Length: 121
Image (tube, rainbow, N blue to C red; front, top):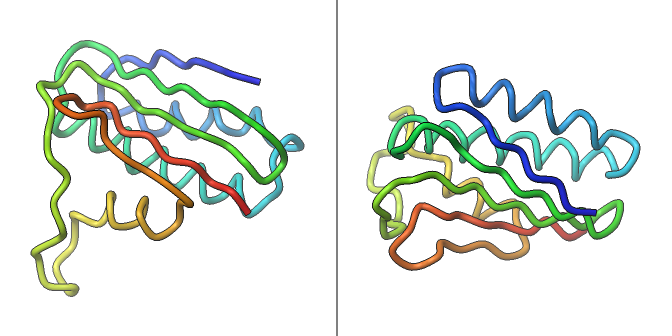
């Protein structure tokens, strides 16, 4: 099952994305749903802070109770993912680190602000 969410850019966008994920309760196991909620919140927040354009698109492909692929796309000019350089005690900058640690696979489409990840348990 594939769902596409178009969310207006703004400070309310991460909350809207989290609320939309709640519709998947009962289709995803609790751990997968919790990780999905966290990672989408982080990526949508990154899109609000660093992206461009009026909206953010979230595409969800539920492949089973413990397998989901997510894509977050905005109209930004692109970026190259970099390792975190801040000390662990400094807040912020953990979004892509969390995506890397919690997902089975993830990436960025070259030259874009199109980040994808898969959760597989």
